[in-house]
Image (cartoon, rainbow, N blue to C red; front, side):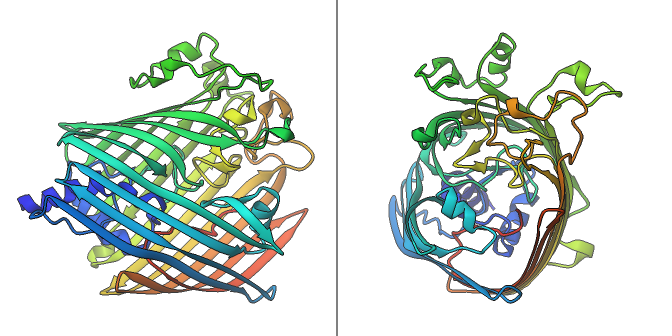
Length: 492
């Protein structure tokens, strides 16, 4: 039992190279269930699901080198379109006495994207979730990236980490606080875990584009994230979240430098200064879960971008600065007591203009992509998932239904890359305002895992409907990959 918990702690702390792992893959449901059963862990702070490496307690030093790859063919039957994506690279892992660990992954890929995502790689120069395009030849995009980390763990209750990758906060399929949708970015983390409390501090560097200054290309910005998680008893968790997004440039792109006060790791330090007129983007949130029965969980999140009490509590008017999001969901690892039968239901709703800022560079995003929910803002979404695993064979069905208000020539609040100065008004800002759009997504997956490699076949239906456009896709996707790459087509 002692060795089990030693291994578990090591997985939670050291194997956070996850960076690009699909945390919702059927591969990791059982690992997640094992962690779920330990009431002392903080399940909403990921990465923790990588779990492929073995801990060798007899050696003071170890080195592992292995290939990583993803080969995908996706045929759109309805539109007679073939998309493909080929990635390959190497993964190097080494640790010294479980106190110092280096994980490094370098990959290069070539992509012919699905028709509905082609514009992102073409006009924006970004491969969603994987980084900047380095070349474009006749609609085929080449990209590469490095993800990895260096971890130093001087004591059992705290560690430091520096790397390039992603982090996910939450127990849901989506996260309204911090998700792994965007491309990797450099970061520094410090984590302390004492008694039933875990405190997470991260300083990270993202890039964004201000459409007002097209000659500037991508402009750097910095996000400082604080997350305090508290386990109440064996079943209840409550967590506090805060992030500050700042840029060394002011609204006119003049250099202003970086405020060293942001290096202060104390949570809710910055909102005090924000009330005094800080020009930066301060956001806060709450997260929590309640474990029910033997393998179930109720969970939720609240994200607050702006908070003016008189506006929030007003019953007669809805103001533009009521910028918040709400998540509620439940999941069961052993539904009806059936081993390996996983079910999940989730609802997400985000008000218009949430995650946006006066200065687009300081929005809550990275390289045109959201740091939270992939739909951006001004939407309501429902998700249902059911999966079953039998030995190395697994099945999963997923349904996503969303409604959102799309922008046209006016900014109705969905695109966080547009300044909220361009909003349509101050009052009567309604949920789903703008061009009414419906998004439907259905995905049935059959997969097999062997030799640390996943073979999968997906049948996907995807529909986007509005008064301005209709997009229908009926796809068959075949993939062979090592369990290190995460991507999704279930948003628009």
